[in-house]
Amino acid sequence: MLGGKDTAESGAGRPAPLFFTNTLSGSKEVFVPLKAGAASMYSCGPTMYGPAHIGNLRAYVISDTIARTLTAAGYRVRRVINITDFGHLVSDGDEGEDKMTKGLLRDGLALTLENMRAMAEKYTAGFVGDLAALELDTEDILFPRASDFIPEEIALIRTLEQKGYAYRTSDGVYFDVSRFPGYGKLGGLDLANQQAGARVAQHKEKRNPADFVLWKSDGKLGWQSPWGLGFPGWHIECSAMIRSLLGQEIDVHTGGEDLIAVHHNNEIAQSEAANGRQFVRYWMHNAFLTMGGEKASKSVGNVVYLSDVSEKGFHPLALRYLFLQAHYRTPLSFSWDALAAAASALDRLWRLSADIARESKRSGEPSEARDRFLAMVRDDISTPQALGILWDSLRSEDYTPEEKYGLLEAADKHLGLSLTRPPITAPIPGAQAPEDLRNLLDERSAARARKDFAAADRIRADIERRGYRVDDGPEGPMLTPTTL
Image (cartoon, rainbow, N blue to C red):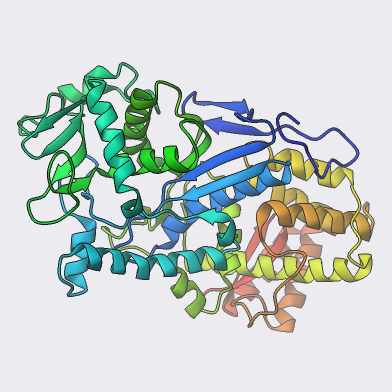
């Protein structure tokens, strides 16, 4: 293992190295930390003008799985998820509607810094609660508020100004991307074409269309600065908090793929211009959660909240299981049927885990199965394949109960599904189909095993007429109600 002292789960063979797909290079790379045995990690957090939806939450389950994998490999992980608690513009191009102002108007509150902070704290409490319900260790994560770092944000802007990367306009301070030759290197942004295609009616004082705001002047609200009353730009918040809490260079930075083109390129430009060194070693981005073929977004109005998941009778970890069924760089389509199938699978996994715990008396041993699981999850967080190995191995007769429990312990550390302490929950929709239907499902499996596919199809049709769908997955066939 490179870097950390692998307490792991070493099994019979040598521990597998960690590989991450780095958006900066566009390739899979071996993880080598800045400091032996330690890993610093930053995840872009939400703007707190409303509750986080499950599309937002996917990013944090993924970052948590990355952090768990680093921790299980022996690294001391220091994690930060920032909280934006004052206004920034909806558009990454520094135009459009201010989300925090929109939230205050929606809630009938006066436009003051105190109300912004209070509104943000209310929604932050709900956000952190959602993360805890999804098995994130929120006590071990720093959640800095951007408004607590105004002096650091101002100092960083002053440094950029002094080094010639920033210029003043009538409405604030902007970063001059032409002064930073590497601008757009994350994700291969084509700045020349972007500028050539930019609208003529851009900010009249911008030197370049891609220049971005560092400080936005506001004659009525904000903080005092060398540039008058106003607010730090959205992008500078992250750079200042990272430098203050984690250092000038960090190991891992995560976020949604929508942040690559503008926000994260802007973070790189201002941080590396100010610090004179590489900003982030490994950039890791997750794909979107989609609903009905569109990205889940408040602006589109196609969002679901974790409270909706709970109100329909699902355990929050059913959502985590659903997220883990897709690779983090692959778009995931959400539906209530898909969640029901995930809930049913997780319920079966919990029951199987409880049986193994009893048989093994909670005594775990290493095994070849555990080594394969570790190798897969350490190969760019390949959770779908890791789940497949988990299911196959737990159902196999080739491993002792103790070896299976050792695999469960490793899976629990990485996946966060409460496998070694299965929760006692209310019935999960789809988890308890009528006994005669479960018997039919067994008959169908037997028919498929003897390659009598015509009989299997007839049984499937019988089941569907009873109001259940048959889903064939790596963990075996499952019954899912067609109406919830």
